[in-house]
Image (cartoon, rainbow, N blue to C red):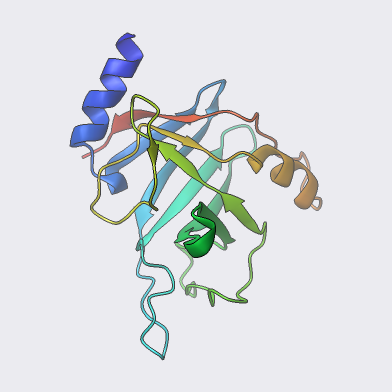
Length: 166
């Protein structure tokens, strides 16, 4: 009960880019959002309208994976597209239709503190969700990243908002 109340208060006052998350049953797996310049394509389309990247850091292996949120449109779902390190000097947002996705696309489910689903992608400057679920994250990390040892894995569990940096 105390955790739910703390998450509710934090999510109301925490800007997305300052939110810190930890996986509920694997606290060494952390996550957060970072402001990124995703620009517009030459035709003026805003392919990545959230203007944030979502990072997941694996504490045991010290690896970080990056994702760009995107709305599903007619499927009424929210998604994350795997991308390369957004902090790299030569990083630029991939083409939304056929750009490289090292781990593919993932369903993204965010909720408020009462587990009401937030039916939109996260946006720069918006309020941080209290909980985030990426259902097939663990399976993808374990089976799609084969050239790394040890492999990364994650339980099918929520990331919970644990803090808000300034």
